[in-house]
Length: 290
Ligand code: NAD
Image 1 (tube, rainbow, N blue to C red):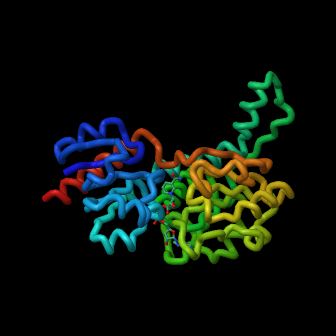
Image 2 (image 1 turned 30 degrees about the vertical axis):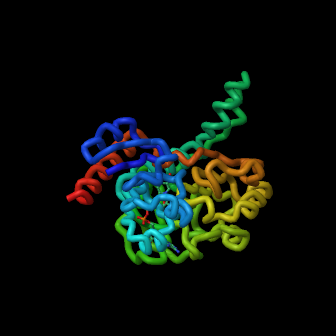
């Protein structure tokens, strides 16, 4: 069996996979591979699958499967697995780090110190305690974030189209979450229903100065609308880890907007998570080769 590591995994993984066959990270060998391991960079499109006639198994180390043509894989009898449970803590910690950095003005404080300034009076801080965090989607990641937010004294509310109750948050309608949140964090998959759900109309129903954190998917927001709302001050800060494309096109309006806090899709990239993903991949391959 030949296994292609098409994206970045923990450096220990190739050695751990040798018991299953030959392991390569040479993408030009895809036509010869039985198993492809991907994260978010590789897109397993129809064309990609057609170029890999021996392919029997795709493993996506991570949660979303929006970079795999699932229908075509099924048609070609290719099994597709992901590792949905592994990344929850890693992503929740990054969302929380974004949320904590905003009221503490960490990025501005650091940048001004590096520029030789001493803005002790100018850098006014606020606290998370007593503020309302609204979660859109209350799945694995949002639940981990809710636990952390509650420990900081926040009120946590959530809207989820498919989950009606949660121990982690008080469930509300979407309109209620939009209207009541000081901090709004997105944790839905990218689907036809969630694409562009943060847009001019939904932004208008939010509190003035709302902080939006997006570790879900870039296309859940309409970039132009968010950039306009940042310029007008309707949105206080947009903190995002996710983009329309990785990396974003230089023309992306978020890159030019004020009051943004940006990370390059590193939500799932903790050392611990990559090790957990490796463990799950080994388990999947053990089952698959039985
Ligand atoms: P999950 O499946 O546990 O939770 C997603 C929740 O969204 C579910 O409860 C589901 O009912 C809800 N939902 C689906 N459609 C909805 C809709 N139309 N309206 C409201 N709620 C809806 O997934 P998770 O593990 O918590 O991950 C959430 C998302 O985070 C993933 O789909 C992925 O897009 C993103 N993610 C990002 C990174 C990163 O590196 N930044 C890493 C992992 C996952």
